[in-house]
Image (cartoon, rainbow, N blue to C red):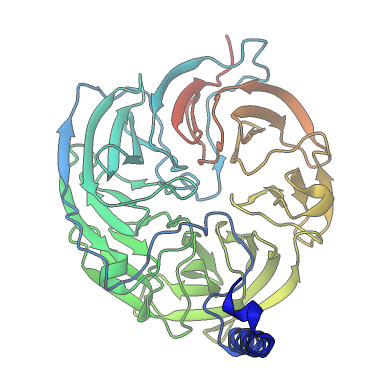
Length: 479
């Protein structure tokens, strides 16, 4: 028998002390400031890499160069940047493409294994360029492959720690005769000679400009405009900037007076009221920045927007209207930009959630022949993951129906057809229609998952990828 049991008074006092201690601890726990925030759990938020600027080490962006035995293809045509030559994901001049593939599907010409990610390729002068992540070397790898057979021509990689966080690489390079520019997952910008792979210059947007990489790493794709490269660091001082393509030195910068931050969205050039400008959907709002002239870099107009995760790029409609979309409950917004006496202003025409109108979670809607086409996000209610067609006034024209859902995959228009890649690698071909969903054929072209990388099409050669593999298929008409 213990001492407490032998002495009732002692037992009572001990119980009272224990009770008071428990009440005190409970009150302190309830009254103290929370040591963590209870928030909506976003995919990829758990285990996200540290973003401390002070802890970030300098990366040698010159890296390591390797040459291989691949030879450029003689195939003509190019796909030089994110969403193609005109930033709209529409192929204007293509070879005749097949209306049906038959039981065997479109021929697979070659395939290549990749590090985990969703980065799409570009094509220039018979070469395929891709930003990959080499998990064995722990390095961003800029790869140059032959469009003919997929054999590697050269590779340049630089060491950087990137943890798996819903994939790693996710941006599309930009290429011209003079330069190849990439943005890595941790906001490293590299410019190379597109033929030799020789290093030109590099920028670390986090170290150099205070950028904060978005959730799941950066998705912003670089923009080459003439001799300049346009970037949107979204740092404390610089919202957007143009750098010289030869040196990487700043040509102009846009002060970040709104205090907005980098999103996954990419900068889009457009002309409104005769003024050439760049439009960007930052975390915090949408801006228009003067692209040239004595006011280059000046903030022309802005509209606040509270979207937290923004992947789609702005979609200019050509008449001053711009459609903006985002996922994770935000939906869509149509704005109108106008000029009066040399001064620009922007207004919201309408705004809605994903259940009330056109929205997009990952890939940018396509504007074609006066209508908007998109894959609806997973929080769009009955229309979730359906391919839809909307009038720009916000009216639903048609949808693919409950039996035809496409996940988060990419889509592209060419030769009067629309190609949609589903999450598991099934490619669906539709006829572009103003009135109804008209499916032509479908085929399994990849056998992995998360087939979310943007599509590239050159001639009759289509490049598609899933999480760990890229394939080149022939979608040309059979003679």
